[in-house]
Image 1 (cartoon, one colour):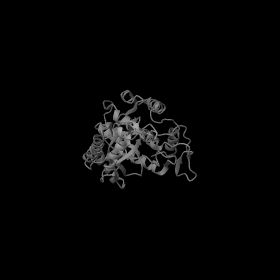
Image 2: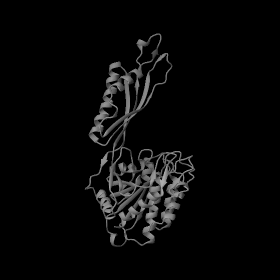
Image 3: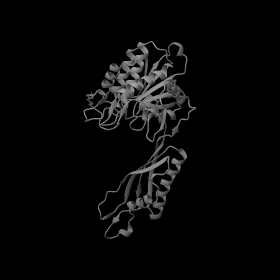
Image 4: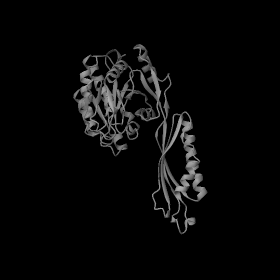
Length: 375
């Protein structure tokens, strides 16, 4: 039932619509007009735009009434994000000579993350409509700002959605693969304030902020903490002439964990070592902690897992439930009370100039979504 030529053509069209993070307006307008012309109820989530003021668009929601024998089943959500990473403007896609892949010209990313997911949803709708297939009520959710912190999914106005089960089309791999767990993620940023002094004349009157930071780091447990938890320091910035005892050192680090308690313990450990170091040297610490992801791990009795595994069993697909340490819109949806998993969209090498769409997997993954919403 999947129309290969149409699905690939739509993907090629979508990746040429510029929509890097915070600039999703053109993509949102395309989807609003596309589904409005088909006669569906289409909403732009203005609240999400207000909560993400740098964005020039809000989440887009499309509502499809249920049809036939499945019309009174619970509403299902299909979701994909509209934004891409840089360099993502002016994408020039082409199909490789062997017909297996879609690639960019190498000067930009391709944008399969996540235009492949959007193209899948458009093809699913087309198949349902032209084949007059029975299906439950459906909601298509297209979010903003996924690549810069899952912003649209966290900010979504849940009053605009009926569905409590969502399939996010944004992963890698073939049919049967699902991302079912993700981490807590903490950003820790701040600065240590010491006291400036002349390094040659009176260094003993100063407090070296970078020495304080070094003391703290030397006492921290870093990188792999346990099987669930990692910590990394990404930035330590101290830029002074060598004849000045440096007064201020800024820093940025992260803690991520698949286990909430382990993550909190590690976060507390990091803060404690910073605090002990500044007390030892008489410096001052200023810091902020921002939690941008919230850990989830769906078990087999979760409704979204049960539905997906049942579909895999019916069609002899090898179910693989994967827990990942990166962020997806599932974190935001789960935070908002919507059970969600990530399904494969067909892309690989995301965020790289070598990004490409694996055409066969892209088409096969569309078929599994059709099975999910028609059986």
